[in-house]
Image 1 (cartoon, rainbow, N blue to C red):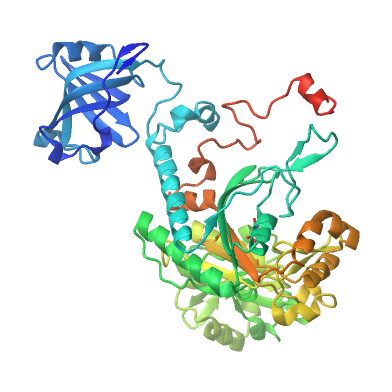
Image 2 (tube, rainbow, N blue to C red; image 1 turned 120 degrees about the vertical axis):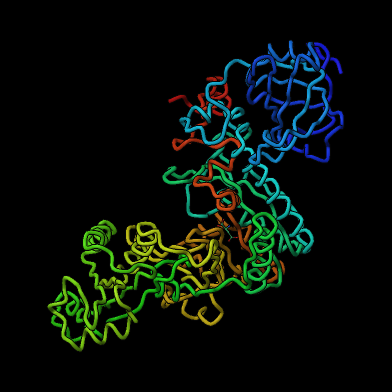
Length: 591
Ligand code: ASP
């Protein structure tokens, strides 16, 4: 092999693949120098490629030339090395390295390309500022944890493709330059040069196109789809992210759900060696809100919420009694896994509940026949007994209670999460999947004083609730489902409306006039007149799935080139200004 720089020997093996069985064989390796150590005459090089790392030994007694070349080698140089694999002496075995039983005795070493000292050390979790890592992302990706995450991501995506195509799904691309699709976020827009003053929108999801593909008779569609949402990048969001997006014809919720149970149990078995019991548990939205106060409950923990209203109906404890008299309820949960915490920790719980917006949280600890609590003095013996009985509290266990209207649900949900974290409570399993189904079709937006879709406007109402659409929209449930893992929503979908008359009624409840509906979604309404099959689907956030599987805390750790919190890319400098000429062509004025 000759390059401009001269000769280089092409690899015969990958660095990370060498094992004891390879001892004695001659190999050629190409890779990056992770580390070079000079041990009094003998130089050791840790050589890295995508498959891993192996130790190369340059001994002048074996090859003076290889040793001399190794003297000129520095970290992150790219080199080739010809040599013989040898098993390491017993005391030199490195059990932390898959190649730790062997080393390569160099007979020839050559530098292929050089590198300045990198701006940070290329090693596991080097604690380097993220902005710097993003600026030099190509170096960052050389670190094993990021590299492994990207490898995992590729394998997961490949497996999803294999699984879906084995089930008759067709992979079909949908436009990136398109018309606004409503997933509830702001669109990114792209000005049209050929039609000045008009804009494309980048898709927030391929929702409408995948429905059109069902009308087109393709039966099952999927896509590893890039989606764009111009949101403020609070928390762990990216302006562009990837969905596993799919749609199926002639299905009911159960068909989508059970297929996804199968897909996920396969992925987790294959990549994490975790056997997930199927079917995954299911909760209707109403049950989830009642028992966990949240539509994405974390079922790794017990702490199920119960209703204790009856125990306080005639209580001397005014706060609770008043709440009950005003139509509220007393609800709470036992902190499973916590026994006799110190008073200080109990008070912290009250503080946390205040932060979550609760006006009052009450704790009670079972002590002998009675209950220890700041409100114990207001409780009669009967009340204490009723509570102890209803809650099943055992010695030292803690019950948390809050009183009020529906607003206490989220507070209790927040307290479940807090308790799990704060007390490091034991999990029942490492991965707790759950489906939440039958969300309300609409929510009431108090600010805008109008109904909004809980999922999106194409979600089908439950068949038995269609008659309530106009009269009691908030009571209409939908044929929707979210998959939740460890309290994180992984994906969501629904059966869609395939009857154009129902679709028009839903638009009208949402406050869209006939003209507006026609203008925005005329193409969908029209398609729904041409023999649409019943259909439904789901979309998953691929970034989040891989993040959880890789045990990472941020989706940026599983995306090759992510954006920062302010939506910029320190590597390329995007977003950036464009030349005045480009603006003129687009008929846009500079700021
Ligand atoms: N398009 C929806 C979303 O992006 C998912 C779906 O309903 O399939 O959330």
